[in-house]
Length: 222
Image (cartoon, rainbow, N blue to C red):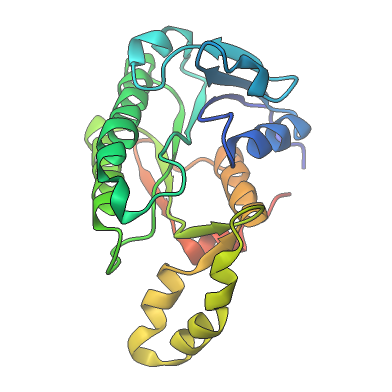
């Protein structure tokens, strides 16, 4: 099956997931543009078109979006922790608001948002901001996909492997099984596959599709 090439606009494309995702999208024939702050252009993978702008200000990039675009929103506070509430409010929240505003103004085809597994007994401030982002998307009536990972394992992010035995036990026990699956670990490769699959297989119009941890792990590319 031939995969139709899609125009994709990425915010947060110079980050941990973004750089690898952009390369994978281009390998599969998609036309990628990446938003970058002035001075950060060299961090965008070669081959992607660069749009200089501010992810917190929709006016700096809304004009380059078109109705055919898929916008992937990856902007967020690195290494989120309970101590970073102020950063969630100053970066994560205004950046998804800017992406929603720009997406709505351009009537884009599809918005892909990396949210977080929820509900959860911890990281309440982070979850609140990401849930607010999902609510903004719904209220805007956009065709969208929200991926809900909990922790993405990869280079520099391996310490949760120590928790694998505890996760295995929690998945066996009925009282904790559902939560352990919802807040399970995913690999960077699984996350990238799920994001690419979201781009290539968008949901029905004006729907917010939720992709949870089990679905991220199952993601397949044709």
